[in-house]
Length: 147
Image (cartoon, rainbow, N blue to C red; front, side):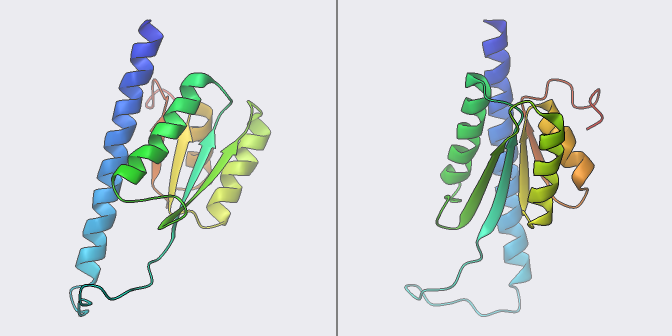
């Protein structure tokens, strides 16, 4: 039961971090458009599709729930897969070499946000980039893991 409580806590922290990221995106978009004119209500505008790369260490019910919760948290803040974001999900099934390859691939493909589910996935992202924001889920000791 202690493990379940830890995953719930980590899931809640992940949702808060996603909210902070979404807020920072919204604030950045607002400050960049200071010199642009706003469109009238009802006009359609092309919206940039952001790419969110999710790398999960392995299949496990708790990790699967964190992945689903991350996607739901983004949707609750207006970032819906297939509408204004593209979620690219990868599962390394515990293979560290494959995990590193998948992490590098998501970075090379230009993901705007990375979500590492599990310590090894988060470490793979951290080793692949220092430029793209990384949200960590199911990481019990980020400092001890060098994150």
